[in-house]
Image (tube, rainbow over the protein chains, first blue to last red):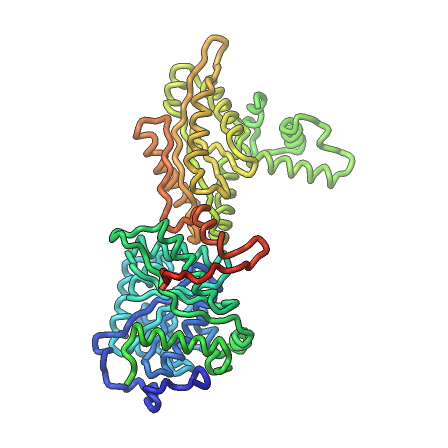
Length: 284
Length: 255
């Protein structure tokens, strides 16, 4: 593999086309929540670049800004949408008009700043959110939910819509503590039996695995689910600390487009590979 | 606070300089603290003194409800940002109406003052102790770990129960309090109303299960105890910072 954007050998000439005939997606997209206990650990950065990497592998990807009104997806992707989820919720626009194309070739649905008023989770907001996801699921292979930080009602609700949870954490103690708290809540309240981990800004190879194993040991001791099996952490990969990331963020570009050969890009491509092989049907 | 009754009598809509001066000097216990020589310094001293008075409950000298609210709001800001634990306790003197009815309101005041003194001796300087209303008190305890919540509340309850109040040379009353408590929600911006409601609900639990007892809200799942933290970081970080990571788990429990 020469760089992160080289297509995988199995789909060398399959374009990331939205017009692909429905295969596995006929039953709906796989929904993966990308979350973190703490803000500022690169959650949105990972969501956007992972979406680009999965798209390059031939998956039809939608990133949904599930951090109602407070997300930075538009900032990271340098998007200025005229229509957002807020207009859909208020009946001013159709859902299909709110879905826009991001530079990486994937689709994005932004919440819009008016959504702050939805940060209280009423039954209506829940229903509208559910309807949106159900309406979109058949058109994609995978939907990434870029959730808010923390473990508020809104965050927990959007995570509850996902079959898989990917926690982004950095090696800092505060990030790990908050990731641990989030995993604990997910195990206890949502009865999650496994949660997937990606360690961002890893200092050295092996850091992520060691951190995950440490988290696992503490979880084993303090968290027991109803099944008695506890919650299992699955380490999906590390994204190394890489100066190119800052550069791409400052330019408001996807890392995978800006510096496709940098270590962090390669790591994200590897993460996409692992997610595809373990969670998705590989694109033809 | 025996001469505090005077401050009850001031009509704040008609507060004159000489009355303000008398009030502040009385509260400070001396004339010396107010220097008349430099007018700006004198006025600043007067304003500071009045502000101080406006935050205090005149009978007990504790924070009044206005001050309490401000402290609670600040604490919510802090907790939302830091994720630190903070405890709010609501206390109510058991059968206080009976004290008033049997021994009169002056005896009631003595009981309130005595309980306030006992409470003051139980809390840390960083805690805020307030008279919330009638015979109800509130304590805000910043940076109070979950494991200590019950211990602190229980210590307060015992201290009051073990301190009889002498209301006259021949009469000593045994006073007890019921205590309810709730921790601030970490990471979640709450409101002072929701927080006091939760603590109040626990106070109701303590009352209805027999009084002279403590009831603290169960901690939400999101709490990470000090023990969990030490286990999380112990092997990962040495005192010098990013330390030596433990060897990879050979059993592969993390994968």
